[in-house]
Image (cartoon, rainbow, N blue to C red; front, side):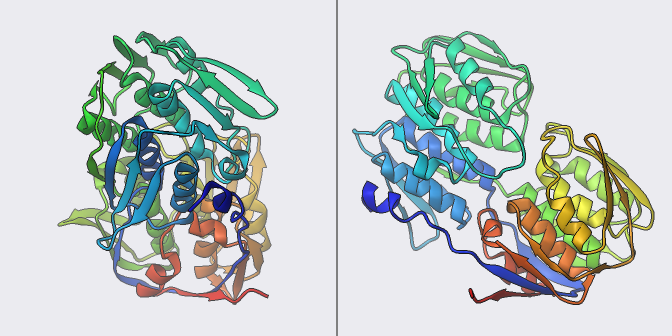
Length: 432
């Protein structure tokens, strides 16, 4: 696919989902690879020439967008018959990520670090993606500047250059996932040792570090607050399998909590969701490890709890729309606090259209649970809000029609099919 063809094919269709009362859920669901890991692993393929093979990559539109972006930068991508994603980086790389592609997802900012490390320059439009508040990438740029890069921002385009990246101690003001990832990739071939203090600790960080180490990097401490990267002269292309998606696990568990039942989540890792499981246990769900995944059961209306989002190992902000939806059905009043992205409340108006009772007080939510919601026309405002609307519709009386459901496809592979396989009543409507 040529660069011109990619740039001319970015208009997305609008789709709708019809959801009817569902459950109880029963059966097994295969958990897909983590979107938030796969996209960064794809960006890391800019670091060295050769053929990469990424397994367990979800077949979702955000991955397609990243493929388009890499192809526009001179790489080639293809899905193999065995389901793996193959990425080939040749000698020549176009170090520019145009707005037409970048504006479709925020993860595109992950190409800045590897471009600076491998090409010495980068021209990247300000990233787009889900709109739920300001998410400036100043911390990414500041961290990269500390190891020798320089930047200017002109008319919405970030232009960076680095003749030589040099390792040093970098202290992040906040454990930013994106800043940690960009530093990991850029510092892998920097001269000397880079130490990231107050680094993000998410499982996706450890997955990226494992990938880079397989390529020949020397990274110690990923998954903890302090990460040490000893720069190497050369990296090589490798094969790697993406970790399971913990946010997808949370989504299916919240759906189970709303409509009840007993399910197995194949491939899920309990050690990635320990605090979530603790909170779900307080609500009345039972979650346990089993061979090859986890088992979960819900029999009663959920109990109210207090929750708050925090950087990992705290509750992820991406969990919150689904957990809040679950708490809308709780037998009592719950309190939820958003500490990561203050603007992530737009989906509450859609829940209120269905009869939910939620009050916002600063960055806190007060949720008065009701036995049932009522089906209504709503919108999927972003990936996780869309999943939350599906869950709400499963527990509502009547029919719920979710517009703009193409957002859900950005984060979940075959979401409707997998939900139907365990008892959900969900149908994709034809465009009108």
